[in-house]
Amino acid sequence: MPRKGMRSLCFSPRTPSFSTSRQSTTSESTASSTNRRRFSESMIEQTIDAAATIIMKWDADTSAYAKVTSLFYESKREALRFIRSVNELQKTMHLLVSEQGSGSEKLVRAQILMQTAMKRLQKEFYQILSMNRAHLDPESVSTRSSRTSARSSTSDFDDDDEIRTAGDSISEIEEVSSMAMSDLKLIADCMIASGYAKECMHIYKIIRKSIIDEGIYKLGIEKLSSSQVNKMEWDVLDLKIKNWLEAEKISMRTLFTGERILCDQVFATSDLIKESCFTEISKEAAILLFGFPELVAKTKKYSQEKMFRVLDMYSAISEDWKEIETIFSFESTSTVRLQSLDSLVRLSESIRSLLMDFESTIQKDSSKTMIPGGGLHPLTISSMNYLTLLADYSNILTDIISDWPPPAKSTLPASFLFSPDSEDSTAPAISVRFAWLILVLLCKLDGKAKHYKDVSLSYLFLANNLQHVISRVRTSNLQYILGEEWITKHEAKVKQFTSNYEPLAWGEVVASLPENPTAPITAGKAKDCFRKFNASFENAYWKQRSCIVPDSKLREEIKVSIGTKLVTLYRDFYNTHISTVGDERSARLFVRFSPEDIGNYFSDLFYGTVSSGSSSTSSSVSSHHRRQRLRSPLRV
Image 1 (cartoon, rainbow, N blue to C red):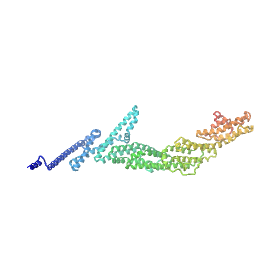
Image 2 (image 1 turned 90 degrees about the vertical axis):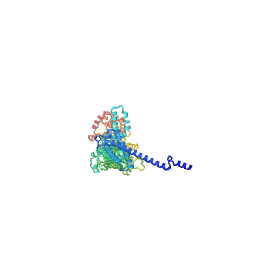
Image 3 (image 1 turned 180 degrees about the horizontal axis):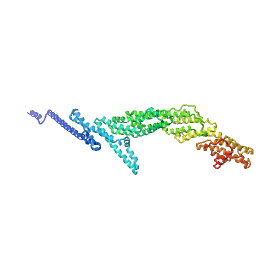
């Protein structure tokens, strides 16, 4: 009995067996699952209904109000609610597919609503891009990117009403630009997440590419062929190069920079879409822009005129190279980087070729016209003008010339003190190249000096032209390229030339006086010396009167050098022997010049005064002497 009572207790209906408990748990789970499903379906219904309310409100096909009004312009709050509803609808569609399959009525309804919503968002995306062209132009966008620095830079002018007004205006533009970019990103994110990236990209590419293409067109960049560039007159080509330099600057500072910033922000969620859009929008225009310098570099005309424009273009691209690499960093824009690099290479080759042409021009100069008075040769002036301008591009030329082999050994005279092809030379390549070009010029001038019949004039010619070279070096960037040692050596060469000139031009005058001017001599000997001095001085004076020394410092140095010797020697002779020749009347017959007169005559030399004839009669000299008496004597 006890056993029987215990068994009945164990299997009493109030104390369910294991089997009974398991069945109860399954029933509860089924009920819970049913409840969740009912709750889920209810939530899906609510989500779809809520999305339908706002989406259909802005359906332009069923609402006249929606057809003429912009959602994002009308109410930003409602626009955000619209976006949230679309995002929730998208999640709901994923849930329906996973639970009910692709054929459920709710999913079909949701898909129709999604299509309506995407149609609306496409319209909004287009409107924002179109209506904000002025605020989304590349310049505004690129300005906005540096908004903080721009504002800080104007903070120093808070008391200036005009500056403050301009700053407020800029801030307003930036605010509109920022808001438009934010709205575009919101729409783009929503469309991409909803599977409508292609439609979004299509709208963006069409509108933005038209802006970039229009910008390039307004900047004057056009498609040209090599033959078209070759056929252009220099004035036309020069104008196009100037225009390109300005266009390149604007394009890199605003056009492409602004477009890259806008693209990066609008499509921040997808690197692939970002790259695709930017590439399609800017690639064609960028290749057109950076392809022009290569065309100019290829043309064989206008050697002298083209050099500095080519250097300017090389400078523009090289200075912006980091920006080019940054802006066009995508693999799909590598052709832009390659085109820029090709242009740099072509420009550097052109610069080297133009330098060789310049050297050849100097060497081929065959003019045999002697410069009157031993003055400056046009070749010297033009060559040094060219070289001093080139020196302003020393940084660029350093890069271009750095790996260029030094000039080949030649038969040029080694007497010009600088050997640019010396094997142990440690001078930079650019210094060697400039020194070589000047050496070629000096050697050419040396050959031209030989055309003078008067040897003294040939030395004066060499001194003048070398002095001009040194002067241009000292007053330009050439002084840093060539160095002080180069200048010092060539200044010594000028002194050597003037030292050779002086005895050849004035040696006979000095020789007409005794070596010891104060030594006692007879009256006849004194008269004879005065006569010889008169004749030799007149002859030398009239010959040298036509000489010219353009450099004022060199001119005074030559005058002092000759005057110190001649005037001092003549003064000693004059003071010692003026009384030897007789009374005052006799002195007037034999002594035509006082020491002061000689100084006055010297002060008139080396200005290039050409005499009216070869006569050296005493009357003409005396006439000039009377005019010169009013002038201060040369101080020696």
